[in-house]
Length: 148
Image 1 (cartoon, rainbow, N blue to C red):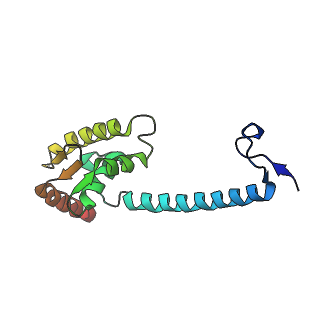
Image 2 (image 1 turned 90 degrees about the vertical axis):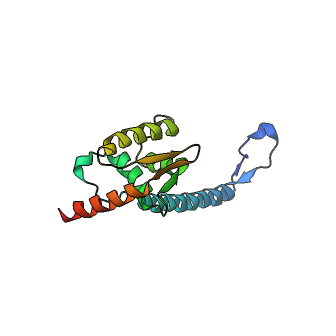
Image 3 (image 1 turned 180 degrees about the vertical axis):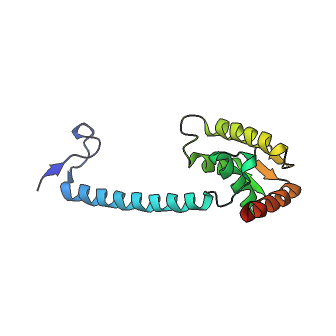
């Protein structure tokens, strides 16, 4: 049976590993990858925009994800980390700092929604939340968009 050195190589004096142990470890890692990818798929499905917002709001995909995350939360609040994940799932934050990407997207979305009476409040160092009046306005707008 062929013998392979540990990850550190012969220099660190670690015991040799057999090819079978490497194969078992590789199989275990592949299984773990499958589990993590399924979890990511389910998480992404949870955050996927499920709402149809009015077209005149002109929200892009990231903004739609953010507004959906805020609107579908039980109290209208989402943490900064959760919203950063929502944007990152669509590849927006891969090239930049996720916090900056979130702030830019939130600023753009606020500007677009301001004329429609929707307000998003910043909870310093915590996250963002919709006002109660905004939740009502969104509910009405979504219902109207579905009937059109």
